[in-house]
Image (cartoon, rainbow, N blue to C red; front, side, top):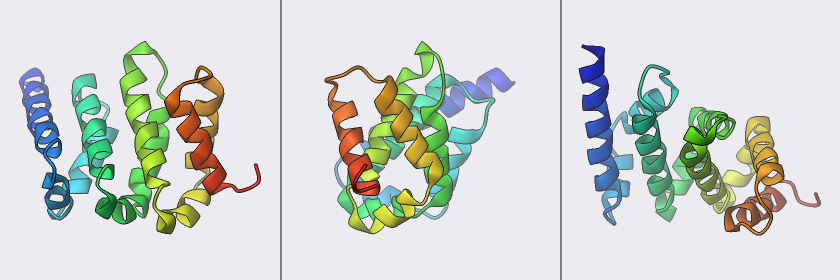
Length: 156
């Protein structure tokens, strides 16, 4: 049944999340053919559970935690678009998804080679600006978002 399939997907994503928590595994995961496509599918398919969505965005954030992965992740347009879309999800249920999406975008902006691509991506810029406007003052993530925006759009 669909319910069982969703439950199995949740467990698979949980297993991948645990794998991505182990140092060195993220590089291996990124090198697996089609891995980013699978993550993208789970992030964009509307029939999966919120749990699978949370696990998947956390996996993507873990992948962005290894510097060697930043250039490839930052030059993957569909990943950038999807991260921007995830930051606009409304409701308290989506706060984890929003925060991990923003954290991933901020990490991607730490890679010099990603800056021009990200700066040209209107969805990324809009997502960061809206997050900065909506976040409480003094939060560490808001400060990091502002720093990312200054790198992407110098002089703002």
